[in-house]
Length: 450
Image (cartoon, rainbow, N blue to C red; front, side, top):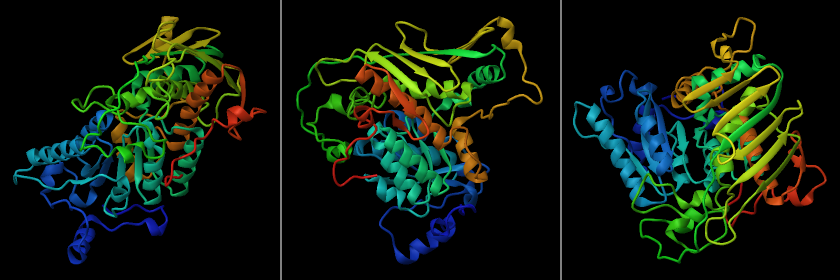
């Protein structure tokens, strides 16, 4: 497809047909998609399809790939993973999916990469889906933005608040369409709850209570040989070197099992960003604080004393916002998974698949003309691709993603320090606390940098 107006001219790409003609004349270093009948991709004409590269095709990435393959306006042309087995599985899935839709027989048109920079450099790719471990969120997103690609990024937005600020600034500087994988925004129950709260149906908002799960610890793990199919040095990337063990990375015999890196603080913050990114995002949506953050935070948590997995277990975090609302996050042993908005006239609770309120009559309320009506998206991925064509803002844009992730990371810092911290959401700095400010960023291992 031809690039849309509104970006720097240096980022303009050729149409798919022009690119293929040029590539045929001069040669390229990668496999090009085969021209196939339009029937393979539904009603969308070949020149109007959005060409996509998928970076990270493991547990979450495989699901994101499947969603892209289900959209007729999308054509997946490349996949990238540091595990060659997973990359080849993804390629086969792409090609077999498109072959089944074609009356013309076999389809061969999905390139495979082991380095996201090579995929991002392709001028015939319009957008990328990034579904990598958390320590590999910021760098591929920055590479994609600088190469003129629109970006779907799995949550959380970043590993650190500094990374998130750079991602948000860069995405907006290059005028890229961006969506974070906070799919609860595209669920009607979460939208209903937030509209009820934003329009005062529960009275003046006073408190928000959020619950989600925790991760276990584990015993020390033995050093193991690195599998031949895994580029482990690249997998570690910007973080400190550590010996390979399967529980540090992901299972070699399963695409769906939960990987060990989720439970290691070098690569992520644990469930405070794993589930917290979803729920705190909805809390911000309901409060109308999507472009700011708390003014103070304090937390406590239990952390494993030994073993490989070291992210928080049971926890309690309290946030205060400038509007006076208190937000309390606790683990599921103490409160139910979901978000409970409490006002001076009632409450609204929402979780995946269910909504409740007191009084119950709140659930029958309609939002009238002149009241706050929130962005409607009924399919998260489809919203992203619709916005690529329209150049409109997605339901979960980059600055909103950064702010919800930041609140989670503030909670993680507070849990580690175990004391009350004062936060300036405008300057994105702690007040009079050098130790806490030192935790807003992490040194990257050479040669990687933001």
